[in-house]
Length: 334
Image (cartoon, rainbow, N blue to C red; front, side, top):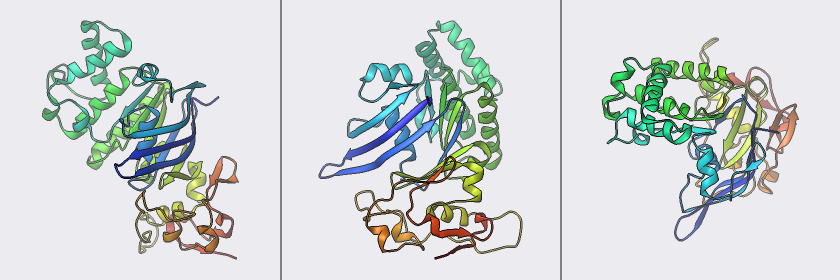
């Protein structure tokens, strides 16, 4: 049984005069101790998926589907069961730590609150544990930092505080939503090293990122999302060596190479369509160089490519690469 099992997750938002569908039936699993990467362009539904799982989308969202944590349903069970899960069993690091931390409360107060709530500690125990957590995430002078406010810390330090807060409940799953956004390269590397060290305890990790290199180094399996759907899922090595969906191939072709001859990068043409104006059939069809008329007939369903590898493309069998896909040299055969 998977630790988390998501089946046919659909999310609609009430936008006043119309209802906008953000997720179109997400199927995803996460095993205990697994590191899963979730990649795709902005607006494809990566963050919405996990906010929906945790019931954090607000009153305008209509969520339906089946989400289970070790077989126990999470959706439709009411607020109380989710409160027992959020932070305690599933914790999330949000994209912008400066907007997630309360600016009028000290760092120690916010950390202690999570410890009292999720682990039933006394005030004294919570402050001692908060200091230990700051030490664990690499913040120097932890005792002093507990008495400071978020605006007194750098972006990297606030991100570490967010990680410490997420760890306060000793969760089984950590969802890291763009944990290195807006951080310089050195701090990015430190945060990723920290996440890798935390996984040594057997905690499962979901890493949401635009950076395929970051995901490749930290995740054993990758799911690629586009326009509210998962278009490809595969073990990391298989995805990079044998990408099956044209969108995945386009993402890889746009990556610069560190070795080999200098080449022109190949951007994906066009832009992501608005969720209220999706094209018929395959939503990637207007941007796909391999599209044919049949691609507009119906939304493609995931098809098996190899063991643990699936792609939602009716033409993946006609696409082959004549060298490493990162180089962007792809050809099509009849």
